[in-house]
Every structure is written in C-alpha cells, then in structure tokens.
Image (cartoon, rainbow, N blue to C red):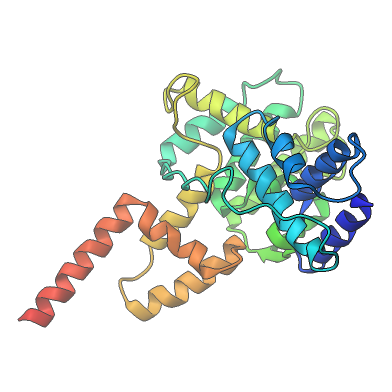
Length: 304
C-alpha cells in the first residue's frame, strides 16, 4: 500500500520537473522497513525508529524530512496516516561551503597531472584532462558534463539535455574549447575508445561522478593545493564556482549592465532562480570587497 502512494507522490514531483531520485530511494527504504513490521499506514514511532538507524545526524534529518513531507501529502487523502512534528531531528540545511577560487595556473597544473592518472595507452587520463578543462571553461555541473553524448557537440555549442530540474540548455563554446573537445574526440578514435557518452573510460562509459571527485581531490592534494584527508579545501565543484566568479568580476561596474549580466549568467549556469547566482556575490571575498567599495563610494557621493 505504501509503495502505491509513493509512486503517486514521486510521479507528482517529476511532473513538476524534479528528478526526485534520492527522495524516492529513501521512501522505498522506509516502506521496506515499515513493511517488515506489517505496517499498512505511516506511524510516527516507526519513522523515529527508522531514522535512528541512520549512519549520521545529517542522514537521519534527511530521512525524517523526506518521510514527513510524504506523510503530509498522503494524510490529505487519508487522516489515518500519522504526521510527526517538524524539527525532531534538527532543522535547516547545512550552510553552503565558501568556494575556493582556483587560479588559472592551478587549473592547468591539475589538467597536466590528470594525464598521469593511468597508463598512456588508455583513454582515462585524457578523459579527466579534458573533462576538468571543460568544467573550468564552461562552469558545467559534473553531472551535466558526464551526461553529455557525442552528438551533443553541435555547430552552435554543447546541448545540455540532463540539467538540474530537468532543464535543457545550449552552452556556447569558445573556439579554443571546441578545438580541445575535437582533439579529445580524435584521441578517442585513435585509442579505439567506444561508447555514446562524450567522456568515457576504458569500459566505454562515462566515469561515475564520485570517481571524478576522487581523482580531482587526489590531484589537488598531490600538487599541494589541498591539505591531508579530513581537511577542507579545493573541490571539483569549485571549477564551477570559479567560472561564475570570474564572469562576475569581468562585468562592467554599471548597475544595469550587472543586472543583465546576472540574468544571462543565471541562464547559462542552469540556475533555477537568479537568487542562486547572486549567492556568489556574498560568498566570495573579492566580490564582497568590490561591493563594499562601491557602497562606500555611493555613500560618500550622497553625503557630499
């Protein structure tokens, strides 16, 4: 019975453009757990017990919030389903980490080091070399880059078909970026690498995004750009952050120009809301200094 309601709930969210895969996975796990006790309806105590089996407080909170939202949905149809009070396992999301802005020479060093990831007679080192370069040059999400197919490279740029929230968009490419991708495709052909995915490993499939994260962090540590295991530092996603910040830094210091630039950058990055693009202003010290300086100048001008 629970799984039938879960299918309805998931279908509703996907009809709104959400992937909802992680939420579905958690709800199916809960249904299997509750079903083991013979539950036909949601029970608050069973939710608590299931959440207490989580590996960490953060996982427990995500489990609780996911099942609670589902229970609110289903209780609208049948009041026999119980809904637990909010915040039992904590409230709110963890703050977004401050981005690390990667210098151009650091990007080049990481790309060069990637060529030594595996034997030179396999495609993998070239895959990571060109993958990291594309992320730095376009600000794509790693999931978007790994979902690219060979036929997504078209005359006008790159077609991103599997963006966040199911969005599709066209990414224009600089001539140098296109030349690099064409060089990678030529290398693929020379090494006999097959598969429809644009970026592939020796198995002919795109590497898993976790593997890409691991390779990047290992190279960053090897080059001294990040501390030992257990310490925070440069991440693969910082290539996207860096692209956004450098784009904003290059924008003319004109209020109307900035507004247009923000709107365009938001679409280019595939943000669901322009508010997510404005986050870079408050999260990056160099941009905050520019904002503070502009505000001070404006205040002095008005006070004069």
